[in-house]
Amino acid sequence: MFGRTVLLLALSLVAATVASAQDYPIKPIRFVTSTPGGGGDFVARLIGQTISGPLGQTVVIENVTGAGGSIGVGRVARAAPDGYTLSIGQWETHVLNGATYSLQYDLVKDFKPVALLADTPQWIVAKAALPAKDLNDLIAWMKDNPGKASVATVGSAGSGLVAGSYFQRSTGTRFTFVPYRGGAPAIQDLLAGQVDFMFGQAASTLAHVRAGRLKAYAVLAKTRWTQAPDVPTSDEAGIPGLYTSFWHGLWAPKETPKEVVAKLNAAVRAAFADATVRQRFDSVGQEIPPPERQTPDALAAHQKAEIEKWWPIIRAANIKAE
Image 1 (cartoon, rainbow, N blue to C red):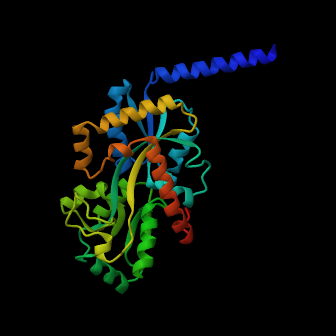
Image 2: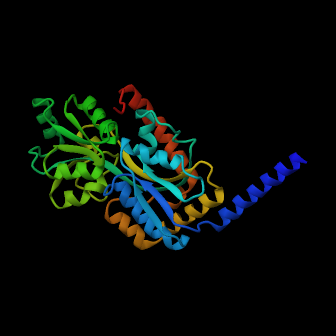
Image 3: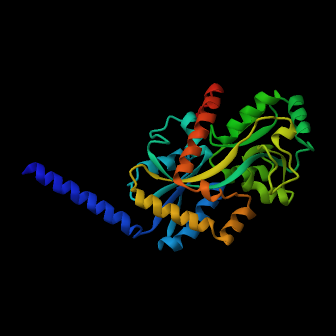
């Protein structure tokens, strides 16, 4: 009798979960992302605006700063797996942090991929007053003045530090890393001339480069960036192999029903099919992946490949969050 009661209870819970997933969503959805004003924040807000219509619910953006974005990601890992609390993260939060922080969650096992979102390369961008006319000049100046240059980084062991450490080893230069809690304050100090340069998301500083408020020395990619075709690649500028792409993705807690993930993915794919949405992403240098790479499986595969590439590099360089 007891066993039958337990079985009936279990079946009723399964039925309730299925019904809930089919009715989803019935209340506002929360996107947890990083610092306001950064690339992740822009992606979160634009995706939130465009999928709220098809889903019939408001998408609320929650900016959680600190520890390279790992605090916000952890909040989603511990959230109820009902599709109402989701993580919009990127290369740093869902790849690099796994090798630089002692996380209380697993970046792969504790999340369910929903969709690969937008992508923008990193580039080396400097304050307008820096006298070096190209990257070779910049390297020469740093060699003549070891340790004098200052480089803004987001977090104590984030993407800027990873790229910057690679740069130092490749060029034999030394400079001082200045950590910030987010991309927006780092860019503000760069504009104000408080720091000399940074390795940052190209999309986040594109408007400032176009306006002449900042100067770009190299894009860290195999090919030139369509948004700034005059800026040489890292290979062309003399640092071969330094390729870092700041891609974004959408994740849910690991036990989120597959029906909920499917609805969210469909809403994202519908948004990406809209010409106006594509134009808005393109105008700020964020590239939307092709349709075949907008699936949950594509995000899972991409994250896995990036972990396999970057974790050994980070550990070999002994880069750790302080």
